[in-house]
Image (cartoon, rainbow, N blue to C red; front, side, top):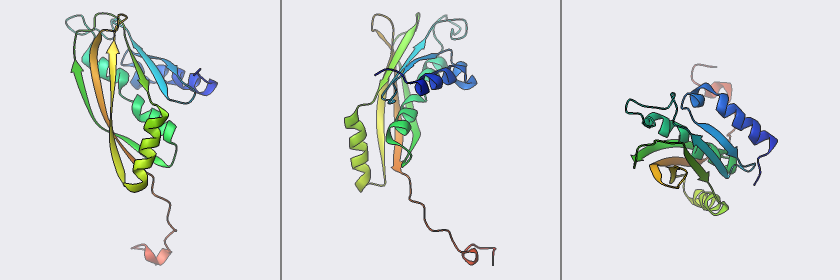
Length: 166
């Protein structure tokens, strides 16, 4: 699916946002429906560690926000999504440009919606691989996300019902 003008502008925003820019990574693609995002992390003076490979913080920072944001955009405003935990497994030193692709399918989104009709919250685990040009996995990042339905707004309390007001 191609990028829309809106997702292209958000991609540019990510790449200029100081927190993300500091990782050294660049977002290269955001599908118009937010079901796919691609990231590129080059080995450069900004991402190189003491031993000349890609710094572990850059590896994690490059992939950190995307599953949460993708779920927020795909599920819509009736759902709350938070990062709960993350695990990084370093497989090989990053000595070249690495890429990561995040994907969500409609089946996953339908399952989340279905689970949340009967449960107050659900935790889901997503895995993303950072790979080189040959497809060799250099790092695996597992993200655990907490997802819940947003509570329906209740009636406004009367002034006498709020402690300290009368």
